[in-house]
Length: 486
Image 1 (cartoon, rainbow, N blue to C red):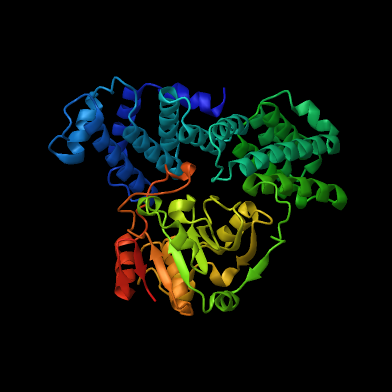
Image 2: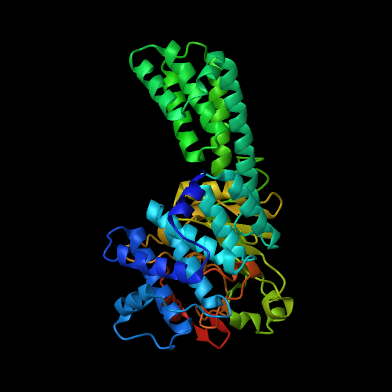
């Protein structure tokens, strides 16, 4: 029985009423938690219960007593809507599942599994549902099923903004390299075969006991035999990886045949690397010209610049010709092009490193923002499309508000948006005679993005109010569509 099958045996999924009751019960479990991830999960559960209270067959107004009353009502079991799961309720369930998945604890993973089963039972062609299922299966170590779920997600979308194809390629390449590694260990330890007919846990324990006594000759075949058994049983990837790592650590303290050890370590490293970031044709991020803060300044000096919001207001603006008349057009993250309204040119694409929307669109300069250097580099290696940009911002341009403006979390507590990072950078350099913001209403008119990104929530980690205040303090003129800072 797989990890997922065991969890499903403990938790019912598929029926909307059962799923909602499970969420309501779990809401009570995480109330008062000091774990940041569970606090965020509790907030999403609270929102879900409010949505449930206003979309179910019961009277629309939420009952008096707030979240406590909603919880009591949920446990008693309000009826699910007869016409299937409404979009608002679906989005709320997915938000809960994503936060539960971030928690990573057994109870939360069980909850995410129940929601995943329910969403796909109600909406078998839900892209977000299949991506949730795939991420959950990957977390649980069920890689074969995860790849199948990722494939179903890709079959339902034209925009791979989450880098799913690279993820699938990485998982498949990693599985192949792991098979090669185990085949190598089998050849290097012929006696291991006799220890593949018993429970892997028992054989592994015997191997560790022999190693503790200093008898590596008896320990190694048992350890390798246990690894082969786990692979044959398709044990969760996390379990296999942990024991492979332990085995190689022990082997490095004993090995005298350096070439044999090096071959095994190389295969182990390659399969780990593929699981983490997928196949990388050029890990040095070649084929681009890096641009520093000073070089970027020189290239924009004296040019008129407009920054185009991903807002509903832009999508109905009819300003395409005016936008294309600027010297430089800056767009953000998952921008959508409709020439009549948005203009057709993109000279600078500013994007957060976490998503891969529009990285394949040809631009002159791509600036990728990220708060943590290692994560930023990881994303560049995974998401950068060769030939899609001439210039790429280097580390001096990685996180303008924090690294250039020196605005620490004590001064600016929220995570600065991509748009604010870009605007702060341009204002700081102060070399553009015209600096206009087009359609910036801070999402009052809703989002206008590529289709695959429209389901992304407008996250609460940003300080939109503070960013708006910063902009308005510096505005030279303001109209319905344009805010001019220069």
